[in-house]
Amino acid sequence: KAPALQPETSASFRVPMSVVTQDEGERTPLRSEGEEATLHKPQVLVTDDNPINRLLAVRMLERLGAQVAQASDGQQAVDAVAGADFDFDLVFMDIQMPVLDGLGATRAIRKLPGSRGQVPIVVLTATSSNEELDPFLCESAAAVLVKPIRAEDFERALRQHSRSRGKEFSP
Image 1 (cartoon, helix red, strand yellow):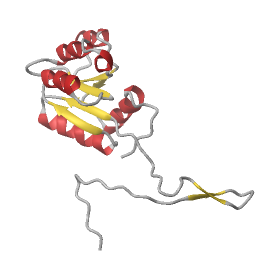
Image 2 (cartoon, one colour):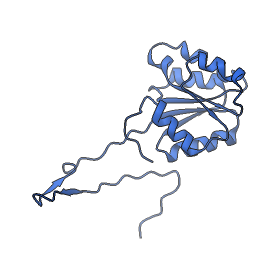
Image 3 (cartoon, helix red, strand yellow):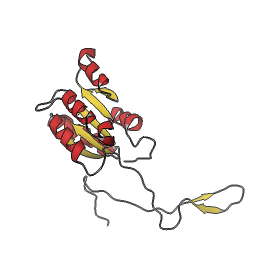
Image 4 (cartoon, helix red, strand yellow):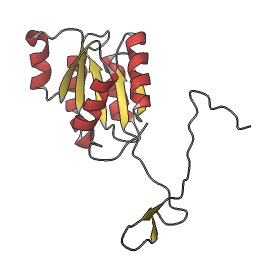
C-alpha cells in the first residue's frame, strides 16, 4: 500500500504516452524516453495584514500551481521583492496595512531598479471606491480584485497579468 500524501507534500509522476495516428497506425511518443514535462510554477507574493485573508489567498494560489511567498505589511513586501533571489511573476497587494500601506509599497516597488520595479501588482481591496483605487491605477497597478476574492479571480489574474502568462502552469 502506497503512503498517503500529506497536504504540504508534492509528487511528480512520469507517464509514458504515445499518439496513434489513424492514417499510419504508428505510435509516436509524446516525449522521448526520460524526458519529463516542465510546468512553470509562478512565483507570487501575497501581501495582506489579515492572517486569515492571507492564508486563504495562499491556499487558493497554491492549488492553482503557484509558489507563494507572504508578507503581512507593505514594507515586508518591498523587502521581499527587492531581496529575493528571483523576480516575482506577480504581487498581490492589500491596500490598508500597518507599517507601510499598499500604495506606499507599490510606489516603493516601482522605484526598484530593473525588472523588480516592473513586477505586475494586483491590488486587493474590500472597497471598489474610485477615490481609493485611482492612485493605484496611476502607479501602474495591473488590476484590482475586490474582496471576497474567489479562486477564479486569482486564476484570471495569474493568466492575464503574471509575467509567466502564456506559460503552462498546473496545480
